[in-house]
Amino acid sequence: MSRITVIGSLNMDLVISSPKIPILGETVLGKDFITIPGGKGANQAVAAARLGGKVCMAGCIGNDPFGRELLKNLSVNNVNIENIKIKDEYPTGIAFVVIVDGNNYIIVDPGANYSLVPEDIDDMSDVIKNSDMILLQLEIPLPVVERVVDTANSYGVKILLNPAPARQLDDHMLEKIDIFTPNESECGTITGQRIRNIQDTKDAVVYLNKKGISNVIVTLGDKGAVYNDGTKIIHRPAVDIQAVDTTAAGDAFSGAFAVAYAQGRAMDEAVNFANIAAALSVSKKGAQSSLPDLGNVSEFEALFCNDARIFTDPVEK
Image (cartoon, rainbow, N blue to C red; front, side):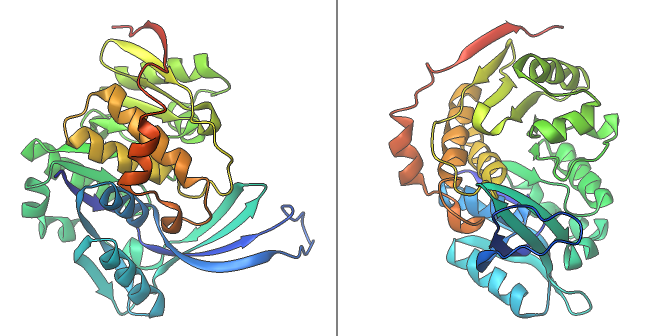
């Protein structure tokens, strides 16, 4: 069983469906309001645990009903919560999610997530050392992310960074990342390049490889993913499935990939596994409530095998 440590955000998602995005000053009647456990870190932890990983989650929550509900949900999903700190002086993070035609628009208030400090990472160095892979996102303070990267790197533990929300990152940190999983918007922000098509995405993968990142996987929603396997850049089409809510698709992908890759699967197999998990997640509403289990993904793997891929030009050295 792969040992995955996720260090990141825990939020309660306040979700509502809307027929449209309101213009300035307009009030729109929504429907189907619900609160769902979320946060990119917690989402990825649950995704990995449901798919067979032995998962430890680290982060911060407030001492409030939302925080307690998040802890309960993680425990139910077999995620180790011993390294989650409860902060009396901060509220639990929340995310306002508006769903329009299956697409999501999100505003996040980090709350306690931003109370995590680098010294907290020093306290869990043994946990990091004994992990097969570390999952990171950017919904916690950047100095904390940098401390995690340095610590994991010093122990030779592989690091997957999902750079969301996107921000400029130091080259010295990027070269320590083993797997980088931006979506097309995040990839454009980080590279400064416009991502309009598959060729643009390929060029961005080459650019990021030259920054020193071993493996780059750019997720493209219903267009699939573009990634490098060490010798070539590959475009894997998406699994054709009706999208209901895309909220946690990227988190499902990163969590699933981490489990498969840490288990020793080849890059192609791990991306295929993650592609299926992401597709299944968009067929249901919510963040963690939409994440598939191992049985769901394994069933689809037989239908969407590794032969369904398109190879582009060799990687430029």
